[in-house]
Length: 80
Image (cartoon, rainbow, N blue to C red):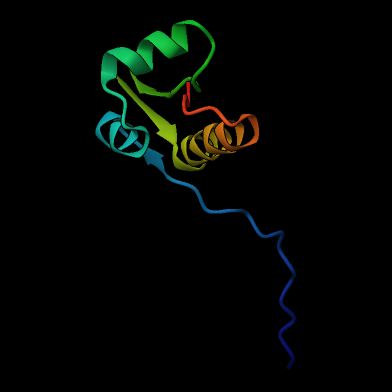
């Protein structure tokens, strides 16, 4: 008897990170992160419960990379 494995699509692995890790990844503190979110300049978190939110790690890392690329292409020092 031969067992045939079906090919499944590869799903990229991601994880949800809480605010302290977001702060460490961005260098911003909570008030700045929430201020940027209010102005549409920072990704919104995923609600995990009534008082619990987290951000997909890949979204935050991409946001950081986008700021770096933007600063390098424009020759500016500001990442916001």
